[in-house]
Length: 279
Image (cartoon, rainbow, N blue to C red; front, side, top):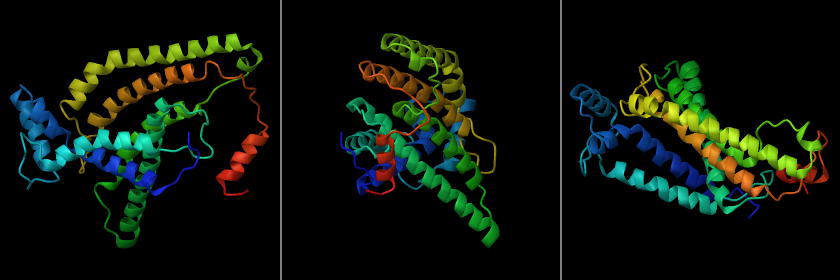
């Protein structure tokens, strides 16, 4: 696995992915109305009204249903850019070393999360400038920042699982032989999978039918679809975290036991030096 990172393509692909995903998320009502129209006339009219109010490209002629050319290109661009991002992503100096090909997806999501932090910070700075310098605050910056922060928090969990950077208590783990450590790893992974299964099983209908399908919005002046998007995202990400936990268990099965303490070793010190550009 390549160990250098920071090329231009590693910035552009996540940014393009965010733009396509953002467009698709904002225009999900177009896909619902085209492919899964509501049988209830009242609900159909409600979602149609929301779409007509929020459509970014109302002057474009739809290709079919409510979907126009930009909607179609953005939808196709998501898997294309995801595949390109997985292919081009490279390990940074301080990231987990023992990558496998299946880890590329989680690492690319990590890059997307990092780019979203930059975008969210830019939105917040823009709002500060307008509010305190120009004295013309926006109606959308606060809700957009909150919306993006929710996605960042969720996707960062997947990246943290792949990097093995989540909180772990090693007091008992380190003193056990390797076969017992593997047993602990199986138990912890099993608990994650069980939690993910019952969370998805118990919430699927409520989240996807009552939030996403009905396109529940936030109820503010900007009125973003935060409930309709973040709640399904919770179930999607927890499923991916469970899958990543299984992949971690398989990848680390034959790994040598590690002793964890608070004293940085020589390899960690060298990694820190490389990260700050010192020889």
